[in-house]
Image (tube, rainbow, N blue to C red; front, side, top):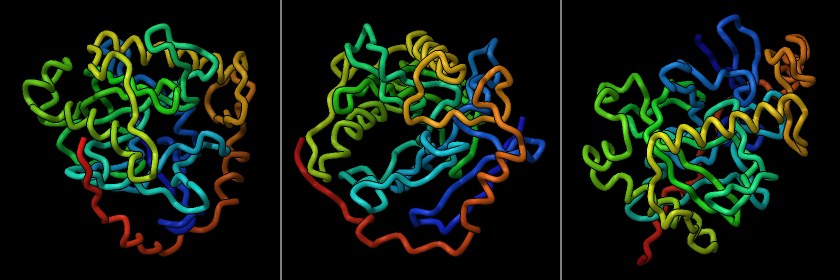
Length: 288
């Protein structure tokens, strides 16, 4: 199964969108139409790369927009870029989400005591390749971190791209500790401090910031898939989320290819990119 992207609008502006197509060239939602599993028997999942490693633009699946294209997050009327908190430059992994998952804001997690954040479940790909924005990769789950973000459970699932030349060496979170020493500690540090330059307090974690193992992480991903099933079948209240899709045949939100094409064509034509503000390269220093 292969996927391609179609850019609309001007990169580095609020109008920029990245739409997705399947192998037949039909427009799809990366949230709802890309299958969660690349290989269910082996627990290999698909992941949408929203933010390539070392970049700062806070790109994300637009869960409230028709067809859920990628767009850059906006805060207080301006495009959002993640700050560089020394020693980290931008995102320190390929960052993205697993499709057909949903962290239900009405479900209080029995382990964290907090409800979900209303988004697909997040992934941090620790592979060597710097992926492209909108790339859909196949990943192996290694473990998970439970970030508590403003009172909401926000799982960060640690994965490795199955096409990484070292993927065969990584099967558990302990393999990451052994083969990439310091990476998990840096991950906790990144998530703890990345909002501080914006004037917010340090983030907190469940389990004292410890990573849960592979089996726990896989079960967490699968539970969010069950929440998504309820969402896409209208058994859970979608609220402001847009569940428009082109392939979930038993979903009341399934639309025609023509309707999907209208959504994409209504977006502005792809144009030259705007420069990224020089302030994005600023470094922030402060003691833990």
